[in-house]
Length: 372
Image 1 (cartoon, rainbow, N blue to C red):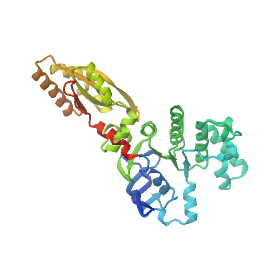
Image 2 (spheres, helix red, strand yellow):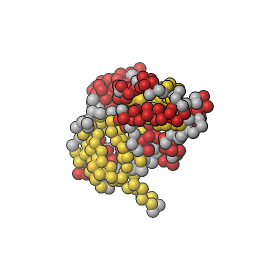
Image 3 (cartoon, one colour):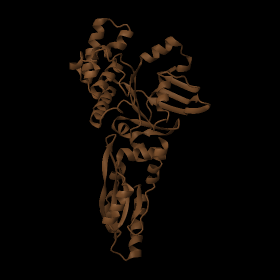
Image 4 (cartoon, helix red, strand yellow):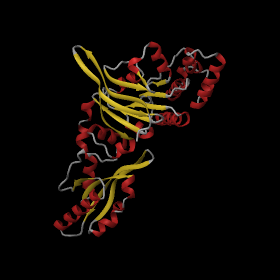
C-alpha cells in the first residue's frame, strides 16, 4: 500500500525531437512515490530514467500530464516558485559534481551560502553533515585527495545540508566499486531512516534496488512496464524486462552451460524451484517428504538463496528420480510437480540429459542486449 504520496505523476509525457525524429523519453507515465519511502526507478540506458528525474525537479517541463511535488502542481510555478521547490529537493550525481577548487567543507556549505545562511550557522551545519556521512576528518581536504566513495559522501552531505524532504540519487553508485557501493547505499538508507528523507533512486543496477528500495518501477522506452513492492517484483516479475534485471541481480537461475554440466553429472529430471518466504513457510516445501510419498527421490544439486527486503529469495535446481518403471516414474514426477503447482510453488522443468528442456528465462537474457 502506497504511503501518502509526496511525488505524483499523472499521465506525464515528455518528447524530444532531433534530426527529424521524435523520441518519447517519458511516455504516459503515472506514478506515486510515498512520503518517507525509498523508491527505485530502474531501466537500461535510454529508458527515460534521467528525464523522469529532470521532470520531478522541474529542470524539464512535461509536454502533457500533471506532476505534483509535495502538494504543488509544477505546471503553475514561475521562476520563484521553482527555486522554492528545488530548495526542498537534494540531488546526488553519478560523477559527484564537486568543485575541485573548494575544500570539502566549502563544497558541503555551498548551497547554504546560496541560501543566505550566516557563517556560524553554516559552519555548524557543515560539521554536522560531515559527521553524519563519516568524513568529519576530511573537512579541509580537496576533492582530488579523496577516494570515489569519499567524494560521494561529500555529495550526499551537500545534498542533505539544507534538510530537503526529497533526495534524488541519479546513478549515485555507478562509478563506485561493489564494496564502496554498499557503503554508500547504507548511508542513503540511514538518511532515510534517521532524517525521514524521501529518496528516489535512479539506477540500471537491480542490486541497488535489492539493497535499499521499498518499492520499484521498471522503465522501458519511456514507459513504466512494472511497479510494486521490491520483494514482490523480485519474486514474481511479470515483464520480460524485469525478469532480465532480476536474473542479473540474483544470478541464481542456472545458465545453459551450467545446465549442460548438471545434466552430465545428474541423470534424473532437473527442476528449477523458486524459493520465496511464502514457499518456505508452505508445507509443500518439505519436498523430500512429499516426494517420498509419491515414490520420487529428490536432491538439491545447484542454486543459491539471498535476501531481498530482509526476506529470502532465490532458486534451487532439484534432481528428481524414481525407482518405478520408466513410464510410471515419469508420471510420478509429473504428479509431484502438479502437487507443487497446486501449493503455489513456482518451478521450471529442465528435462533430462536425454531429453533436455530450455528455461524460458534464457530467451529474456538473449534479448537483453537489444535493449541497451
